[in-house]
Length: 333
Image 1 (cartoon, helix red, strand yellow):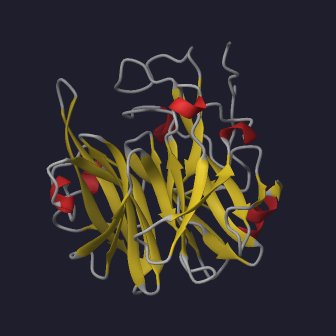
Image 2: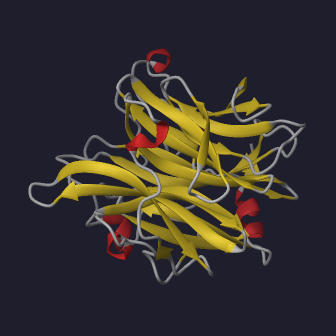
């Protein structure tokens, strides 16, 4: 059977890319750096804080060397100062099984920073949750069994428990191929998770034929939990779109609204992309072109929503929209 392709995709007119994009690149990092992307971003103690994925590659031939996580601070969410050294590397979990840690997501819960992250191990890909007050000392609270990732924690308890979105990898039960969906679980203590529900399946999205999943942690609005997601479509006719011999996927950002009390229930979502790869730094010159991956979302008091996203798996970017406009895109499920 031939896979249905998504064709040409356009970003929503309500979203605005920042004129200073990319807002963070490898040139801004005061230690070895090749690619800076897929950051988690939050407001904490009056500052914007960003924990970013820092990939290091050799130049010629291009070959992956290692990953660490860096910390950057900002007064305005646009201009960033990267701290002098990485804050996390593969030794973070104190486990010889761990090969690399990457793709952080930040949520401030009860005045403390909760960080979700992905962990490649010798026996599968795990999702981790840690907590910190200062980005120097971290308490690791939870690591999933393989295979799970793209986890984000909600910024407050609902009904006395913590909540998260996640994207497991059910290859066997989904026909032996990518058909990955967005799920939900809750926890009494951020350590033990269960009560899981399917939130949305990839088949809901006309512009995704491969997988969907959570992106940035949701933000609370009077209408529900505003949630940015990542969507992926695959086209076998695509050729070399980056450093790899072939890159056949395209990542977009979508938007959805979840029930305020039962956040596994979808109130509405957009049937078209919020952000599709169009800008030069999204479609060319990167490790993997045609990639937008949202990892941070901040709702300002003014009603502006800042969405931080990795672009082409190479740089970190910023787009914004009015919260009312974003909610308006979420037509009933």
